[in-house]
Image (tube, rainbow, N blue to C red; front, side, top):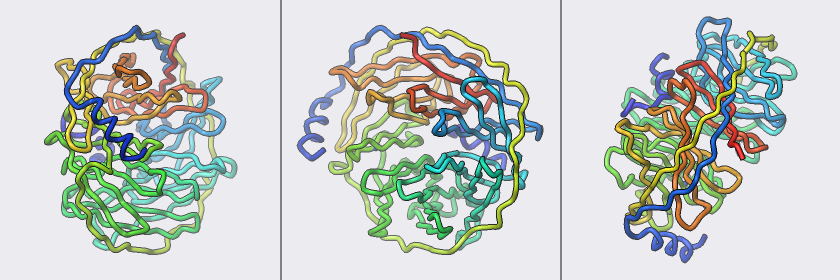
Length: 402
């Protein structure tokens, strides 16, 4: 697990102006310890998910407008919880081998998800129970498949298309509301694409885990710019784009969270020719049905405040996570309402908080009760953090105690 992200378990089974930026880098120009503070305890509510298909795989998680979480409930199923009652609803997909991954809900309440094994981007309308697949057709006909997904303000779905044979760099893709699909080939072979994120200018950022790179696709210019992580073999994984256009990424194999300032970092730009085609299949009717009881249980976990220090190279600031003797394997990251970064550690079954809303950043960590590994996280509108645990087939609700 120290060199392979948890998300690949399923696949193998199938980041202001220049003055502000300069000031920020000067602040962290030399390694220094950060102050600690008291840490609140957290309440975890655990919902055990059982699938009628026989394979339960709580992969991916998102939250709809009502605050209810959605996730993969198994190889060919999508599930959702009623946040108040814990009642489970399951949608069995027409393709039992669809292998849903990342899940997002659009402004109309439709649920979009990646299907690695098809490969396709699919839409579930929970009101009508219909599912439609948009098959991805890379020109080489290889073994690529999508894993991560984002939806922009215009309703376009952005995704990665990962080539685990390492024969190519894989593709970055966009699916329009009308079913028009565009692919851009990543220029670095063997990239093993990881998480993606959209910046305020409409560029798509992505992590190349195997090649130690964070990249940016400018779809208007038809260019990809690649930035090498300052730590060798750090295996970038999670991507989080800040409102100011800077980019945060987790260094999965280095126990660090890095902050990239694109205007100051050196990148290599390659022009890429888009591949375009129409996609879409006839919808199938897949009505939701009640799932088995989730038997929610509540656990109070104390928080631990720990020190962090930073190191700086041109265009990058790296925050070092506290050592535990085990590789933390940090991946998913999300901003909370205060601008702090919450993250999950695949390797140590922890939820962490990089507290940035202070003059001296520090870290809080909480242990996930009975966590097995390979997590996804997402905040709902109220500030509650939802967590899916692939290893234990569990969905968690995480709330800080006041």
